[in-house]
Image (cartoon, rainbow, N blue to C red; front, side, top):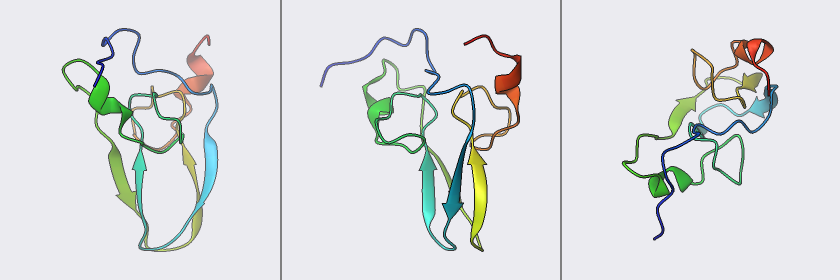
Length: 90
C-alpha cells in the first residue's frame, strides 16, 4: 500500500457542512482526514497517511434527526459543524 505524506491534512472537502438525516441505532463513521471518497463518512483512506495520525470518529443517534456534519475538518466538535468554516479562506 502506498503511503500518503502527512502534509496539508486534514483536507477540506467543502467550506460548508452537509446535513444528513440519521437513523437511530446506526453507527456513522465521520472522516477526519478529508481523503475519503464517500464524504463526509470514512472509507479508511486515513490508513494510508504516514504515521496514521487520523482515525474515523464514530457516532450513533437514538432518534431520526438531521445532523450537520463538518466538511472543512476544522471543527472543534468533531464530527459536528461548529461554523468554523465561516472563519476560513478556502
